[in-house]
Image 1 (tube, rainbow, N blue to C red):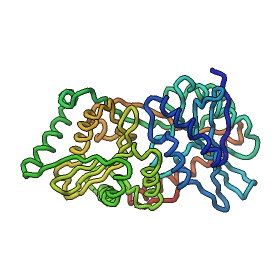
Image 2 (image 1 turned 90 degrees about the vertical axis):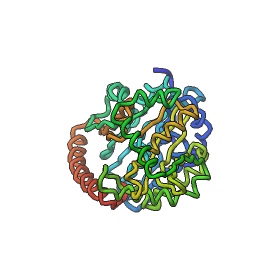
Image 3 (image 1 turned 180 degrees about the horizontal axis):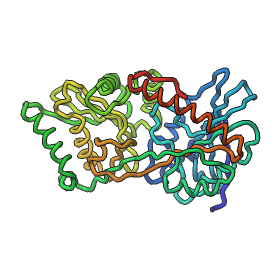
Image 4 (image 1 turned 60 degrees about the horizontal axis):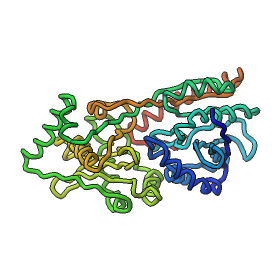
Length: 383
């Protein structure tokens, strides 16, 4: 492992001081995700950090340096249950404890320094001497085993796989389309023919940065319509909560404004399907979407994705990231799967392991209740 030092960032002023180094690091990391950027994490902290009487979120960002160069950032939240400095329980986990707005909560690391992530976790666990602290990490699957192997102070409680699907585009739409599976080729043919049969024209409009603000009300409305659809995969209305809308609007107003895209499919003069996306250096990341159910018979969401891929090829993007979650709307495009592991650990002591297992059983029951209520579009407070 290269010789590095870890600095712990615990104040918003020190977080601001990381900006230049963090942005420079973003330019050196292949496959950069929107959720790894400085702007996303600052916006997230602004809207989701809690400061109540019995629960408080504290900044605990691990900044890894090789001499004066920032080589890795792990944005962590140190959540304490108790009153002021007296607590019996802590939960240290990545930024992004929200209702699936932060889809991937992985640290940002220069590829030459990924082994340093294990050092961060072991430092955290080694100095934990009082009460119960749980640790959560989200890492690329290839790094998980080696990280756990080099953190003897932590005991693995549970882990789950998070699949992410990425489509390699190539240089030409027709060549790309010809390599697709027969079922998606047939779906595309039906989409375009159904519009033509009813003499309906369509076009794609791509908005960037502040241009998006004018169409956000329509996007929220279409997203809500999509959530109410009963004949497709169930999704909650993530933007029925004001705080969630403010997070997106802050991103559009941030230093990442030009990375924010709104892909709008018009049929005639009507915006019938929309998808928020992030134009990252290596790929176009497709985020949440919505469509007008009155146009569902034309499969306008499939048309929107196809038109988006055509546009991405024209713009020189090599890949489209279809985001996380395994469903047919992603897998039918023949994507590559990139897996991440969400790992839950506690310090390696018998009583802590037993207590954490009991708490996990309670949380599992709460998650089932949360999932049931989310299906009914009842967004619960952040846990």
